Image (cartoon, rainbow, N blue to C red; front, side, top):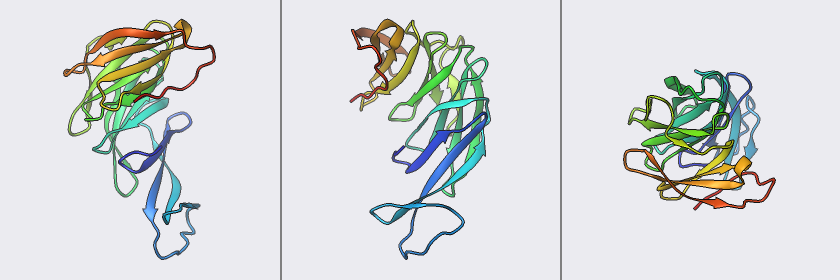
Length: 206
């Protein structure tokens, strides 16, 4: 995954997170302790570096412009955690397993300004919103953990380039749910895009 933070991360097995870091290698020396791939611009991909998750079953993630890592937790009760990505490659836990009370919190997105994060709850057909502080802390937007309802089994999610709209694929209903993101992080439903083909997977937006 590429982002402004130049970090590559993915959820690991059980309760582990893995990070691959990029570094400049201008003199051509081999870094023997780490397997790496050299890119066309002379940079290398090293790792992975494995970090214990602060919550059970990390699944989706997003990184904001302040190098905050926002991770959905698909385990019992559902929720999200946040971390700070260190330049040296480590992760510092900030918010640990902020519970939503929903099920199967899988996909995660963070708005362009880094103020709000959303996890898509496939098991309960809804979306949980979080306010993200300048220190990376994540708090629920609503006490009941439900910011918007999609119905069905929502899966993939994507934001418009200006983070004004959130799009969520709801396979069981054959539609893409559309929401406007308000200044306080609340979500206002807009007309859905209906008639998506069977077998559709993944979602991209502009």
